[in-house]
Image (cartoon, rainbow, N blue to C red):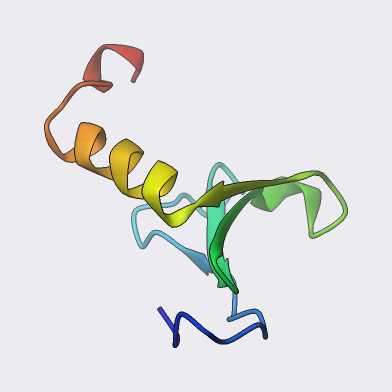
Length: 71
């Protein structure tokens, strides 16, 4: 991620495990917010924004397997 004080958005990033048929989400840093969007919307759909603390809590849960039952 870029400098936390930077208000310019970084480039959208998608996981390397994402499929080529668009079944993926992308994320980027925009100032103090982590934004998430659906790749299939090609930048035209909604974007969800999370504080760094919210995103860190979700990421920690994902790493611990707390959401594995959803996949």
